[in-house]
Amino acid sequence: MIKGTFSLLRQNRRALASLWGKVNVPLVRLSDGGWESWFGISKRYTGGLMNKLAVLVAIAAAPFLLAATESQGNLYGRFNDGVYLAPSKLFKISSPFPDGPIVSDGREPANNNAGAVSFIDQTGRLNGVLYMEDKGNAIGTNGADPTRHLADWFRDTGFPRFFQSGVPDAKVLREATGTIDGQPAWIAVAHVPNASPLGVEVKGSLDIQRNDSWRGMAVVARGKHYYLLQTELRVEKLAAPDWSYNADAADWNAFVPELEALYLRNVRLRLYNQAQRAIMEVKG
Image (cartoon, rainbow, N blue to C red; front, side, top):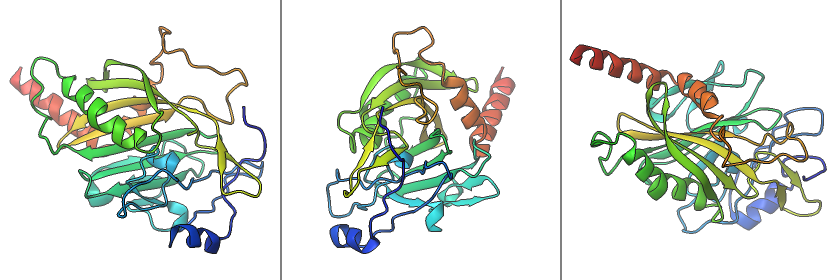
């Protein structure tokens, strides 16, 4: 386990700008106990159109997403009174953490209108929603298996673009069909090396040391979008030194109720589910 003072990059903004051009580095203190959240500068990026400031904890290491934080005062969505409103009013979701969480979001309209929002608390807990428009019109063509298109999107598009694009060694440990609020879902857990929401600053360097991350995930489809709900399983400030995750355990997906609770905080998705149930009842 990494020891030391967990903090944000404190390097000079001008020095960073000389390396990567114009960037905004959010400096947000979470507590007086030495722990602070950090928003890492990803060195794994390609293509001249990418924003070189990547919010790893928020965007799940997907460097193609343009990143912003509430502390910078320039979220792409809006966050007021504990409620986040996504760009274009796609959805509205209340924060799962009541005590002043750090809120960060990102978007890339040119990439199937991909976007994300994350909420991070003082202990390193992370809840987030990543989303992408269904350009292939797979939603609604479920056939006999209502989760097949969810699994296909997750394996072929969601996980590679949102996770492996920034962390090539990220790996899905286990996945299976499931439900969120009574609707079909694809459940998965992944190991993402060096991607803990909290990292330790390396003295005299721009580098940040991070422990590994284990993310519990659930993919759902609503309207014309896929949504990937995620939570951090190894909470940095609460994890025991001998913490481990067993993907073969009977309770490997014990995180699902937490993701369902996150889903139920999403006003638009919840109302969509209620409408779908009403339609089914009428048909029945």
